[in-house]
Length: 416
Image 1 (tube, helix red, strand yellow):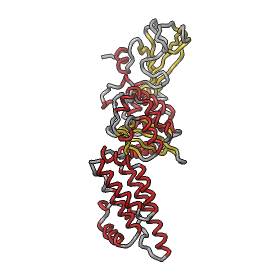
Image 2 (cartoon, rainbow, N blue to C red; image 1 turned 90 degrees about the vertical axis):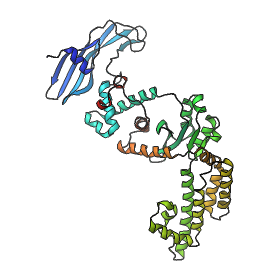
Image 3 (cartoon, one colour; image 1 turned 135 degrees about the horizontal axis):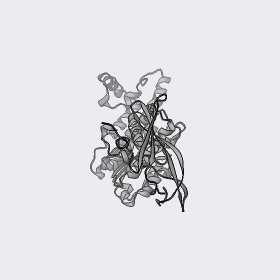
Image 4 (tube, rainbow, N blue to C red; image 1 turned 60 degrees about the horizontal axis):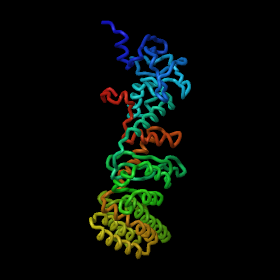
């Protein structure tokens, strides 16, 4: 049975009033050209105001389409331009591609599939980096426009570097779904406030917890923008434990220098013994560490203070949690170890947020995990030309967005 142009139109997704009227091939370049025309030009509309307008002239245009076997396939047409009384001469829209693109929606959907698997391999499709970036930008724009305006009760706020020299981006993530809600350049008040300004009053009201580190810009902005933020901001265990662990290491380094002057090597090579949790130690490490603990060392005293702090995150009562932390603060302030006294002052200033984290049972673990995933995006993409492309890639890979053109949204996954 012979196949007519009606069936071919259906195969290549060409819809009325457009139709394929001729097919040519270039066997040398392995290319197929589908020549398309508009069967009825009486209803052509201005792309700005949708008013029916007369044809002004035509311009040759070409779009990359899904391949036919081993042949690259292109849609080609003399695309009409119309004269609008309000907007002048304008090129009409076509149903198979975005106005700014030179690839069809179907091909764009396939590029998105490839990018989801491995960004570098999309070059095998014969596209330039600029074309690939254009696909990602359009996909993210579609996804953000379609994103639900629902609530996100638990969020995490964190920053990550994108370039040497302390260049940062602010990342807001949904702690429940594990997706990125917002990416902003910098880690200032303004970079976070831009996202809060985009949220509706109802969305801000429904936020139950905001997990973050103790960066002042994030704290002040959140207090200014979220109702009841004093009871919602949570400084999680990870950042508090990290600061206390750093203080223990400072004590160890200071004491090690003093001991080495007296030809003692008690603390040489023991850095990670003091920072590793006992549960994660090997039997050999536990035996050696037990000997260290029994010696009269300042580092052992600092370590004991650190260990007690890790046991203060299980309380359910605000009163008892505050009481035990204040007892810990009293010990840390009286220990005569300057690094521990310094970190105790930091904890005291932020105790309200630590208590919130204990009672709300939240941590910034999901946000920290997001940072690791962002690093993976940077590695797989071999770096980014500028921060805007990085931000776009984070939304593309980690935003949980509906990226596909509407025309290919409902394709079976096996065909994507």
